[in-house]
Image (cartoon, rainbow over all chains, first blue to last red; front, top):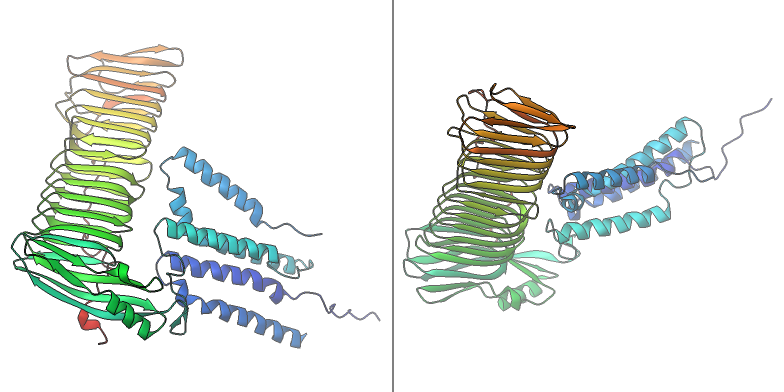
Length: 66
Length: 480
């Protein structure tokens, strides 16, 4: 019998890999909203914190379930 | 092995396409587009990288440790800095620290403190009113009164209330001068460097007043003034309605200049985006670089427009001229008219008197009204179409060095083909009409009476358009 090897401890998770591009996209969207005059970046920037927090939370939950 | 990203090659392709577009349309305001839309590069970058990673995950390939590397984040920071600087430099917004970054109600760079403005002074019926250089918006309205009355509010950005109060004390608002020469002074330059003061003013003046306004950033909205109006400002949108005297505007980075129902001459210099003029009884002279939507309607005296790539002069415009990027559409104008442009497709219908059109690169389509006058149209690269009303008499000479000649107008028109081009001639005993293209086709045809004009009358909601951006805050809204 040849059991499936467990994932390597340093194998990066999908959530971890995707959090950078997700933050980048969010930053772009917030700046675009600012430049198009709908709402200033000064007011919307906390969304970046929220997205970052959600990514870390998803990563944490993902690693617990693994 | 480190995998390459899709973003770099796509960025190169995008840059190439942008520069190509700029070469084909020299009027293309590339910097303005970049300044306004650069955040979409970040969205594209992030979106592509996300798709790449999802694709790798779906095909069981090893995932990168980080989606965006440290070096790439550095690039993002540089791009943000460059984009925000460009955005501020072109006048779309204010660059930090003048912008606000709020932390739950607290600003990093201070908070806004508002103070009401009220002042009044008895004046003559025809005073000269000078508004000294200020930051903020001004709405000036003429009425049957013999006083200058200002209401509005002063906004001070400061770290604390005490600092704001000190700045408020240091910048007293005043109406100075005598009954004939009035000076509205905000004294904003006396504020400490760390505190930014701006004034939004609602100014009521006698109808016979003349206005001289100096601004640094903010809109002017002026209505019902019989005297002259002079505005000199940076980053100002200017909206004028029912002005009786001469109007002179010198603006840098204005987002819009609108003028409606003006009795005197209008002289506009500077740079900016949109121009919209309608029902102007005086001569109009425009000298500057305007990259947005430029349109004119019903100009009763000559128009002279000089831009970096385009020069137009006409005697009278009963119809419209629209000049969006790469095109010049006009209908119902009186010559002698002259248009010289580097790269635009030109369409002119219903014109009388002589017309000269010279284009470097672009098609020309002309539909004159009877009686035909002298026409001279030249383009280096582009087609020329002349649509003539039935019964038109003219002496035509049309030549192309490379291209076809087509005559659907009259059987007396002779075509001599030579080499890859040719000449088309007719002698009906009328004014000279000369058409020439180095490279392109020439068509002479009959115009049908039901063809629509090249520039249609546009019904615009003149008042509603800019109110969103011009927000005079009135005293009754204050928390006093």
